[in-house]
Length: 259
Image: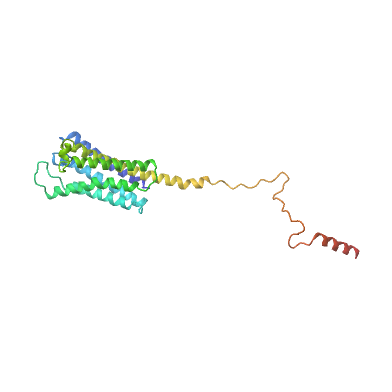
């Protein structure tokens, strides 16, 4: 379905975002959430690179779907664009420090933009695979969409801002759950791109198969007697149109000899 460059751009942007996330996790002091790394010395650049690279991956996949199948993927493209816009807004508007008791406008925009990203991408994967055949690539997209959605539900239940967090001691592990959501959605994006590219190859093979399977027309071989066509039988008592009966021809020949 999608062009090859769209596949590589989506995979490359996702890989760059994952590398930026790994860099912050390995080189910077541990933070509760990924966005908090932007508030640490040396963490702003990798956080921005990670968010913008993932936004570019969403945009490249959406554009590839426009080229390949604009009618069937309209809902998926809208959700991918919403995810890309949410990532860009999250990059532009920083989060509030965890110790802050008053939420700023920038912090609220960041939180709601992140909510759009986390919600839009699993739904985009599900709508992309909806109604498709039960091939392995579409089953993989469905499985990753469900996994990302379930991980998001667990993260929301554990987040300190929810009423369920004290019941399940969510403060202890809501940070790892947020990272699990991000990684699941990264894998989902790449899975969608691979499925779309594989669909393009399958369509090309299916179009070439009928032409290769049509057998060549065979010409009838001449018989051993050298006959090129079978003799047509004439019903008894009838003659072909335009020819005289055999009896009449013999009578005319006899009369001419007598004369």
